[in-house]
Image (cartoon, rainbow, N blue to C red; front, side, top):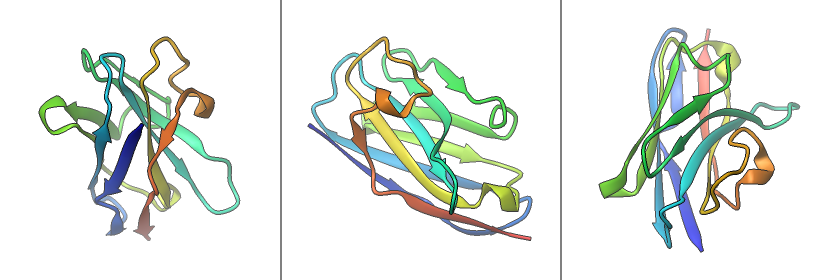
Length: 125
């Protein structure tokens, strides 16, 4: 079992930045990987980015590639999502997700077995 706790959300003005954190605890295998998703009111939960724990390799959805950066600190068992140049459209509940299984599609919700409770990001215009 893996437990995930997000933090770092809040209210920010357009153009501002936030860094979300996701602290993982429990049994993290060598194949551990983490993703970030978000869900705005009335919309589907969408993939943002993912990182493989073992080597730090990353993947992004096209819309996030220029403004968001995913990273991880293996020593702290914590993943991060740095978000810059935020826009009102980025307002959503942000979730981190994780899996101990390698080889799954990083952008698919069904690839992740563990989810955090979410942290709210609100961008004011």
